[in-house]
Amino acid sequence: MSPDRAGATPADILIVDDTPANLRLLSQMLTENGYQVRPAPSGSVALAAAQAQPPDLILLDIRMPEMDGYQVCKRLKSDASTRDIPIIFISALNETRDKVKAFAIGGVDYVTKPLQLPEVLARVKTHLALRRLQTELQDVNLRLEDTNKKMEQELILAGEVQAGFLPRVLPEVSGWQFSVTLKSARETSGDFYDVNLLADGHVTIMVADVVDKGVGAALFMALSWILIRTYAAEYPTDPELVLTAVNRRILEDTNANQFVAVSYGILDPDTGRFVYCNAGNCPPIVFRSRGTHRLKKLVNTGIPLGLLEDRTWDKAVVQLDPGDVLVLYTDGITEAQNEKEEFYGETRLLDSIRTNLDGSAEGISQRILADLQEFVGSAPQYDDITLSVLVRESAEIERSRVDFPAVPRVVAQWHWQSPAHNR
Image (tube, rainbow, N blue to C red; front, side, top):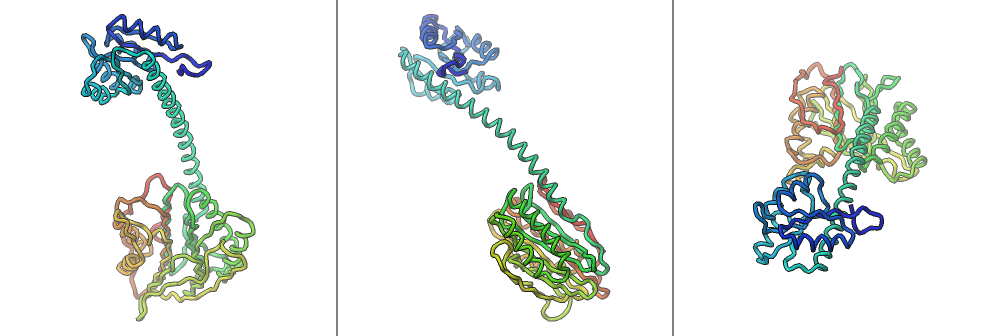
């Protein structure tokens, strides 16, 4: 399509003018400069020629009988097959209003008569070069769109594979209720969780957040989840040894320059003893069913994993009595923003938990997420959200099952919500 490159097909130029002398003059000049020329003596002939075979450029006179150049231009710009053809108006009309009208309806240039052939040739070369660049850019965009579609499909598949690591059925433990929800901000997630029944009857509970986003975070998430699962079986009662071993392996086996914040604990279902480490993650929250000090935060006992070698973690113990509620979460909840760029925050999260303590584990989780969605509104989700709720059942405190309305989800991004209730 380009006339200015060696070996390229000559550019096709349609000349529209009802004056035969102008047609001959322009046709001769352009033909001598290597262009392919098609003369059209009227607007109707020009439209038929352009629709039959769209040219690379149109030189268009304004004053013509039956259909003037403005009308021709409007018709061309209303047709998808001819809309992008550059049109240079050529006219004896020299008023500013005529030029403004020509540009307003889609012309790219305006040359006044009597014609200066070198000027016309220079304008033709310029706009054909621009047209060539536009066409090349359109081709590149089409290829990019195709590549992006393939990448999106691959990311969706990666998210499905990633989600397959995480448990979709939570363990059934007498006297306890578990609920977990993970809502990713993208096709893949840097957040992950686990609720796993060990061979000795203990239950490991974890939520974690890779401090990065994208595919790299997703791969790091998969590695971290597998390592924690592996060492959980090796150290079934010692969360600090689990994190120490995982940290060592991450630093020995990778050069990812990434780290992961982890809340990890081991529950003895028979006694309610919960031994935990919090490695730089949001502090889990315990709401007690009785007593004066009903709120307890499980503060950090060490730094995130993957930062420093030879680092150890302290462990701590909290007793979960009948009626108590334990909530673990990632900062995708507290740092969620609404349209005003206000943060949801820890205070609102605590209030949401506090006002829904009479629900089941799933009910509490749904109410928190509903309150979060109400706060965020139509603002986009920037970070992954993970929420885990644990309830120790009580004969004195009835926790009746309540059906809560579904929380709006982000379609096209993978998320998993736990079954409604586990016993």
